[in-house]
Image (cartoon, rainbow, N blue to C red; front, side, top):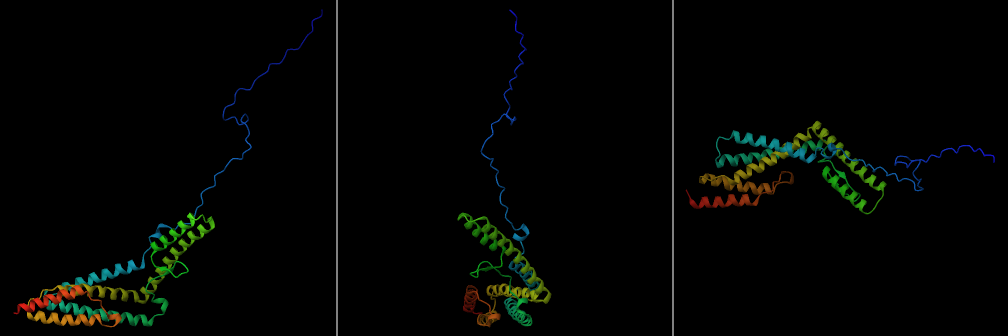
Length: 264
């Protein structure tokens, strides 16, 4: 019997189990991968815009510095703190205040309207709401944006509100700078600061006058004349008017009556 010659069967190799990094062995998913969208970036104002110089704060700072210097010079020039000296200082302070108001009024009459604005003003909405403070602009639009997000308004509306907040802050900064430059160049700013300082000086000296000690009957006479002056201040023209403190006038009147009751 003839033996049948057969060729050797080639060896069979099996692919080992693939690791997680072998993408060829992993099943192909039919679900496309989910790519997270980057967060939307809205324009935000810089720290400098948020903390920009406030017109009212700057005016108050310069007014108080001027008033403090004036008050210091008045007290330094006093020979004594008697009633006669204190009453005279208060009366002179009122005359100086009237003169400062007159100089300011004359200067304003020479300038056009756009060069004598009392402060910058930014309109916030169509109803006419205005402000000159950056913090009010930020609060107004932040509240509006918060309500818009809560109601589900789209990206376009949120972007518009963010852009408006930035625009209003930049506009306020530009207007404040322009008004200060115009008024400092024309001399109006110095006159306004001086008039405000004179009013504050008058307030301080009136408080001292209404608290001064009445040592003699002559002081009582000066006190009575000073009370009549106070009534004229309260009824003067609006630009020269001074609102009296009723407690100070009452205090001076009571002390005047008590001193007169003692006689000499």
